[in-house]
Image (cartoon, rainbow, N blue to C red; front, side):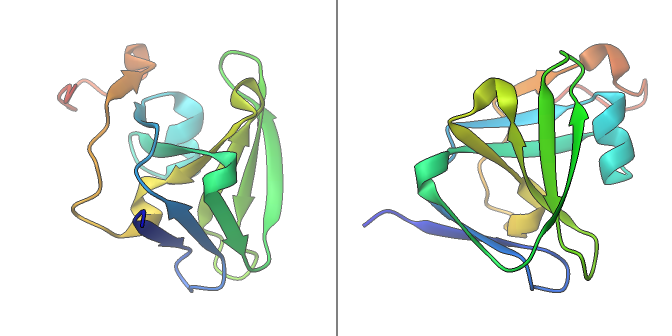
Length: 126
């Protein structure tokens, strides 16, 4: 049986169950991810759409990515946590915020993108 991974918002009302390991874990330094997370980068785990189950109410917000392709973010209407998003350029995948898994043993990022926006004091980890 494949391992199930549970990601939740801060209040636990929006939940994503993912089966197995992610296809990719990506660390993004873009300014939009910095604004979305309130941190200096965002980290997304990409799972094939058919390996994801979403439970609970979510609100959504769409914006163009830095490459110009739309991305729709889904967040909890109660606590505001962004738990997952759908990148149009990768329509067969759902991206889940790695921090939502609250698992210190979660697989590390395999790639870093938009490093031109990386804060000078943040060391490259990939």
